[in-house]
Length: 315
Image (spheres, rainbow, N blue to C red):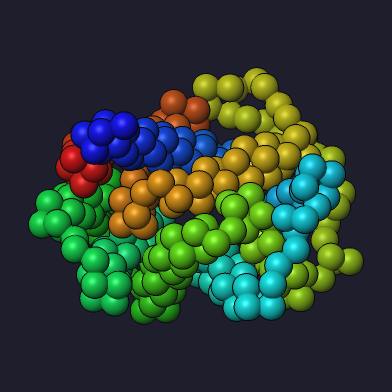
């Protein structure tokens, strides 16, 4: 085989890997967006608090993945002593801390402002790649980040009168750093371990953390049997909380997180984190289609600007 043929095959393989990575990251953002509305229905209509729902989400996903791997490939549940640090970091910071701080932020800030501050994370990822890993970051990536953040500012309608609580702002910014850690550490961790077992073990750490914070013997299990209205475009339809929780665990946690981690095996953390910003736009679209939450003209323009920024970053 000639050098030209080898080079052509390598280029073709690289293109396929990029396409797979883009597809996985985009699918993950879409599933997270749908899960936002599913979680909102549970929280608004049921008796579970946000922290209890987070505990149920992490624990249910960890147990389901552990059961699957125990039957299909039990050797993938083993880990070496030198992996313990990254698993603790990933479970506590990448999963537990991001969600807890986000809840602290949205209790004290308008949700749009909290999401905007949290999604400064891709900029932190790009800075890490440039300053710490000494990787080249093209100028168009910085331009794309600027566009995407500007678009998120429109979606959040930051000009609306709101008092910015200091604790809320600090929580959202630390959540951004924790989210950046999720992407940066994930790129490193998925080069050594497959995404499914990494997700299982990290969620296991997160589940243990939440069990210590909120012991399971005080969990309101009776609330899972409640039937809640789906509302909006599904007005008149109802679903049990346990069924919505199962959706949240499988399609809102296991699958999107596995896809997001899988994408990090094909794309650098800078690109995956920028694609993740579409979750905010897609989440607003799902809430509009399902829950009937209105979108202003500025928010629609902002969503388009975010998408332009994401596309620019991938070219």
